[in-house]
Amino acid sequence: MNTTSSTALSVSNPWGVVPSLGNLDAYISAVNRLPMLTQPEEVSLGRRLRESGDIQAAGQLVLSHLRLVVSISRQYLGYGLPQGDLIQEGNVGLMKAVKRFDPEQGVRLVSYAMHWIKAEIHEYILKNWRMVKVATTKSQRKLFFNLRSMKQGLKSEAADGDTHRHSLTNAEIEAMASQLNVKPSDVIEMETRMAGGDVALEPQTDDGEESYAPIAYLADETHEPTRALEARRRDWLASDGIVHALGALDDRSRRIVEERWLNVNDDSSGGLTLHQLANEYGVSAERIRQIEVAAMKKMRKALEATA
Image 1 (cartoon, rainbow, N blue to C red):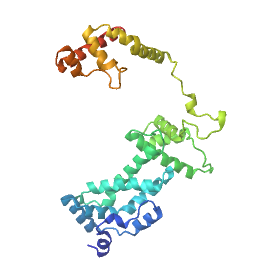
Image 2: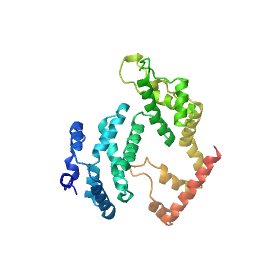
Image 3: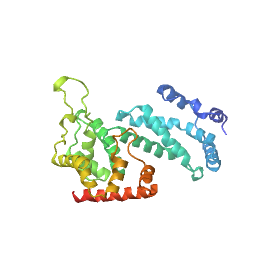
Image 4: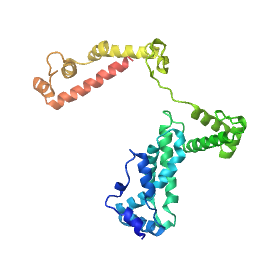
């Protein structure tokens, strides 16, 4: 094994050689100084991880590929998200790749890990680029990233130098749809989603009466007919409905329900317990519970009949 790399990476706490993302420049400088593993070293570490779950071997494989995550993260800076966050998500993908890496396949970890790193970064971008998701299915995600890349290419190749033009022409839409093997309508829909911005529901500044936000235009459903009927029904159930339901019970069942659920004004302890009612009627507490359950069912049926 290469002496330099084994000395640099074989440490009791391999993560300690890399500073935290709090200082991004220092982090990038540190990971770029970490030596790369040779293929025999990579295979040896991969076998140790797969055969015995060697955490130190996993740490060395991850450390030697942190610079790959930094390199890939630079490709996604145009989304306006912090590079430190992109690197963190990419590192998660790298660790997933190391966990699943099979050294016997004859493929270098760098080639295998790229897929996992990009997948995690893609997921992070789609969750955080907009408050409302612009892509939910796998095909939409692919279209999102490909379309954005192609639009940037069109801007850089514009002969008229108009780099501020955002909308696509019909010819560009047709060309993109053909190249990406999707319908033109799919391209138009994704372009619309990407062009839309986030708008806060609440006003961001206090500018007096002239300050309006979308929340001011939301419908007030307080007086909507269905809601009004529901509110009226709730009020009836809380007053006359209970009286009506209690009227369907015999005297003993009614008193048990009232003592167990409605008698809350006599003192802070509420109504009588099952055992107190059982002693009063000369039966078991279980029998009082059965009477209570049957009474509640009868009350429910009485209320349903009035619906």
